[in-house]
Amino acid sequence: MKTLAILTRRQDAGTDDSERLGELETRAVWRGMAAGIVRAVHGLADGPGAALELETSSAEQARDYVDALPLEAENVLHVQMVPLKPFPQFAALAQGRCIPSRT
Image 1: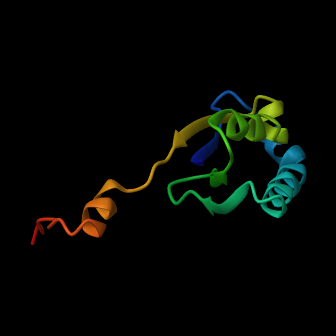
Image 2: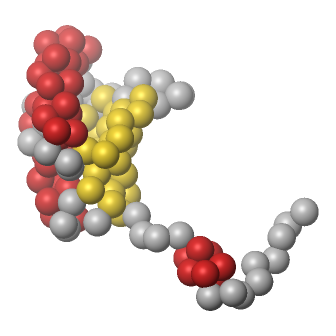
């Protein structure tokens, strides 16, 4: 199961927590990549934060991974979990059904 986890700093969290835990957080995400849970990491273009593409066997496993991150464990993060599914129009394309263009 693919899940997009969008992580931003909570408004009421101090910046010193982010600084204090930053290296631990980066190492935890790196371990997630080595374990195959984290497939991609992106910074957010509109401000501080990150988006993690997770690959797990369940939504609960994805949530457990994020909950164990140092910044989330210290309640510094606002987390939005977005479960993903295959793009349905590709199935229509594979079945030979015409997809109207919008040009």
